[in-house]
Length: 177
Ligand code: RTP
Ligand code: MG
Image (tube, rainbow, N blue to C red; front, side, top):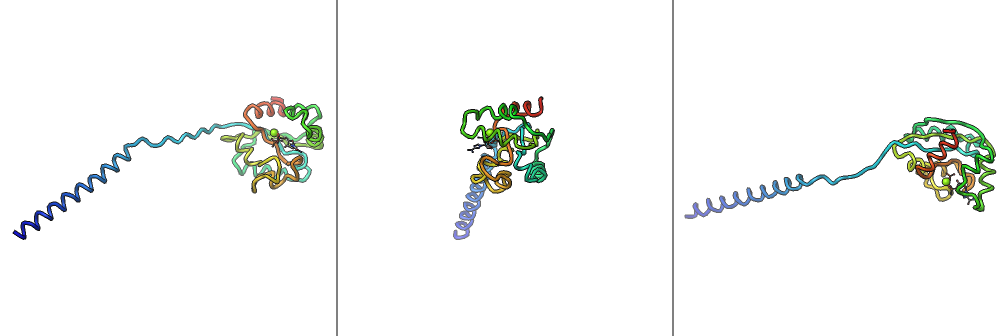
C-alpha cells in the first residue's frame, strides 16, 4: 500500500513537471511568434555645405578641421578656398538681413579666405550641424569644432547648412552649381 502511494505521488510529480516545462516552451514559442518590433531608422545619403570661416583659416586650423571632417565619415566631394565678395556674403546670409549683427557678419565673413566644402554622408545635414556644435562656443558641446576652434559667437570657425533647402541653396551659391 505504502509502495503504491509512493508510486502514485512520483507519477503526479513527473506529470506536473512535464506540464510546467511545456508551459515554458509555449510561452517561449508564443513570444518568438510575436512580430519583431519595427525599428524605423530613416537614413539617406545627403550632401551639405560646410565652410571653414576666415578666423579658422587665418588661425591655421583648416588642416585639422578637414582631418576631423573625414574622420567623422564625411566625404569631401568638392572644396574651394576663396574670399567672398560683399554681395555674395549678403546673399549667402540673406536670412539675417536687418538683424543687429548682420553688418558685422558680412564684414567678418569677407575679411579673408574661406574654404567651402561639399560634404556627403548618411544624414550629412544633421550630422554636420552636430559636429560643428552650437553657434556660441560657450554653449557648444566638448569635442565639437566650434568648441575647439571658435573664439566667440561671431567668430565661430565653421558654418553648416541648417536644412536640406539651405544645403541646396548654399551649394549652388558657393560652387555656382
Ligand atoms: P552659420 O549659419 O554660420 O552656420 O551659423 P548658425 O546657423 O549656427 O547661426 P546663425 O543664427 O545662422 O547665425 C549666422 C552667423 O552669424 C553670426 N552671429 N553673430 N553676435 C551675434 O549675436 C551673432 N549671432 C549670429 C555667427 O557667425 C553665426 O554663425
Ligand atoms: Mg545659420
